Structure formats: C-alpha cells, structure tokens
Image 1 (cartoon, rainbow, N blue to C red):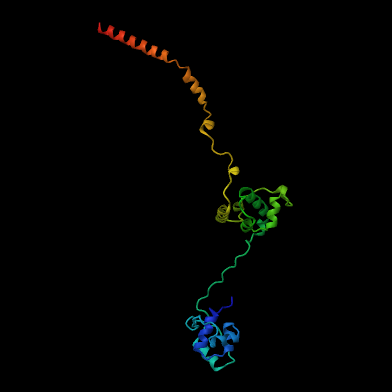
Image 2 (tube, rainbow, N blue to C red):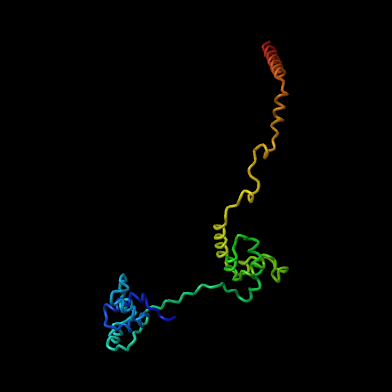
Length: 233
C-alpha cells in the first residue's frame, strides 16, 4: 500500500508559511494544483485551515526540505513511516467455498421458510447469493426446486449463528405491528369462554320453596329440644 500524505491542504499551508519551496514543489508533494497553492499564498484559499507541520508528523525531514529549497527541480519525498499500519480489508460479498456452494439453495429455502421477515439483501449477505436465485426459490421456479431440502445455513457453515441472529433482529425491528385480522380472534365475554348457563342457576333459585325450608328447620329444632329433655331426666 502506497503511503499517503496526511491532510494535504493543511500541510501545504504550513509549507507556504514556513519554507522557501516553490509553488510547483508544494503542489507536487501535496497533490494540489499550483494555482491552488498560489491562492493559499495570496490568502484567497484555505483561510480557515491551520497549517500542519509535516516534520512533527514524521512525513518530512528537515534535510529533505533544505535539499528541495536549494534545488527547485528536486521533488519532495515522504519519509519512511516508523510504524506500519496494516491495510484494512475491504468489505465485499461473502465468499463461499466451492465445496459448499451446492448447499446454498437448501440454505436459502430454509431461511425463506423459517424467517420470512428477512429481506433478499439480508439473505444475500448471509449465504453469499444473488437476488435472482432467492426469487426463483421463493417462487419455486429454480431449476432444482423439486430436489431442494431446507437446511440450516449455520449447520452448513455458510454463516455464523451471530450473523443470523443479527439479521433476524434487524428484520424484526423494521417489521410493522400485526393487525387485528392477523392476530385472529379477539377477547370474548366471560360467559362465552366459560360456557356457563346463568339462566339454569336462576331457574333453580326460583324452584326453591321457602315454606318447605322453614318447616324443615322447625322440625329439626323441635327434635333437638326433645333430645335435651330426655337427657335431663
């Protein structure tokens, strides 16, 4: 990876203010147009930019600047960095090994059936496929649709459980709340759910004879009184 100059315009501002380098030398080093460097020197450009010392940042040495000042044809060169920063990997489509590519349709079918809330773009990220393939499997127009078997992509090694859970969580956040029709039956009255016939109990209450109840109580009381008298004798 080629080394890049940090903050080119701020570096150009510092070189214009603190060195005797030509506009062409500064422009070549900072990858700017010479007229832009001239505008910086005239105060017409980069007025709000604070100069960045390339010596302090380790991008230039004093000897390199002195060499360029004494020779207008000399081109400034970046100093070798003291610490090498590894190049970050660029994000791209998920790579699927050749040996597992034949399992992708089965994994797509599993995702479509078990997680219908997932969008095509999410499925593509998980198993590394195309939207056209997903659409064919959804519509059962895939050339091998009759032989496909739903299989968990995590078990197949096409994605991790963490990635799958993350995509499902994202889909759940974007999913609208279900309507009353989707939820099904609503709450019903207690009489319907418990299936109690309150009229039956009311009919039983009406059939109770109050006189018969009181007569039975009197007979019980008289019987108890006779028993107490017998005990007294």
